[in-house]
Amino acid sequence: MVASHVRKMTSSYTTTTTTITEPPSESLQKTVPLYLEEDIRPEMKEDIYDPSYQDEEGPPPKLEYVWRNIILMALLHLGALYGLVLVPSSKVYTLLWAFVYYVISIEGIGAGVHRLWSHRTYKARLPLRIFLIIANTMAFQNDVYEWARDHRAHHKFSETYADPHDSRRGFFFSHVGWLLVRKHPAVKEKGGKLDMSDLKAEKLVMFQRRYYKPAILLMCFILPTFVPWYFWGEAFVNSLCVSTFLRYTLVLNATWLVNSAAHLYGYRPYDKNIDPRENALVSLGCLGEGFHNYHHAFPYDYSASEYRWHINFTTFFIDCMAALGLAYDRKKVSKAAVLARIKRTGDGSCKSG
Ligand SMILES: [Zn+2]
Ligand SMILES: [Zn+2]
Image 1 (cartoon, rainbow, N blue to C red):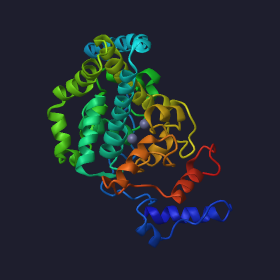
Image 2: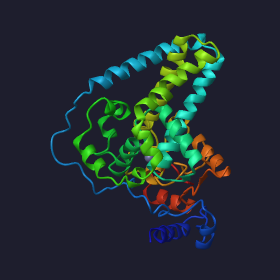
Image 3: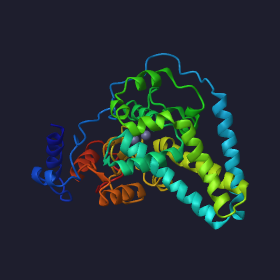
Image 4: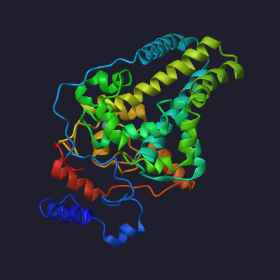
């Protein structure tokens, strides 16, 4: 139904311009798993924007500070700053180790909890899921279940009080502030009603949730500090402040920029009516998650972008996994549907698609 609607829109579009090709025929779409139409992921609808949801009338939310988080976050950032000072005196292997740990952590977020578990944009076999849950634990950003619940609420109730990092409340709030205060009642209420049955049924996700505290201690703090110190004789303080505090802080801030910068700065070629924007710099730091106007317009696309490998290491990684047979059923929106959307709701910053 939706697909035929999009196709109809596109063919009327083709009469007015010569740059657009006909959308692929129905039979072609069946044989090619990539480039499918809008209803390509019928099993998951909890991340689709619900414009009918509006904030309740009343005074703006009061901030209730969580001092434990504020103090820990401040200490972590101080440790990271000291790590920055120690970079020149660190061994090359330590810097390489921290970099690889950064990339794997980011994949635990991008390819793992974001594209796989929150949005179900592709499917992964057990070895890949095990790798991703370990990578996700290295990144320590709440367990997969909680992250995905917050993230589905962020998409469904974008820019309302039920959005955990509502960007209308400013850069600082959507970046990190939301983690330093109690959740707004609307976040708890609407988030609590989301269908999370797919994750509840996934043993690996529930296993991570059960053992989350010891797991993050080991994977985010102890292991990255121990390895450089033990294996190539790095000074303990360098191991701790560079490989652990600095690396972890950079992973956090790169991810947070998707919620702050990519909701505030950039073009909106796909949908000018929503706040998320295309931000190449964020994509660079986050290895592909900064094409955020596209991503909110088409949350079911496994590339989280109109394109595939363009400033998008995460898509390259998923494609490599697919080549190995570990990832499959990657969902990709057709070019025709994208062009129809640009024509219908884009801000005019992208003429050719
Ligand atoms: Zn998302
Ligand atoms: Zn967003």
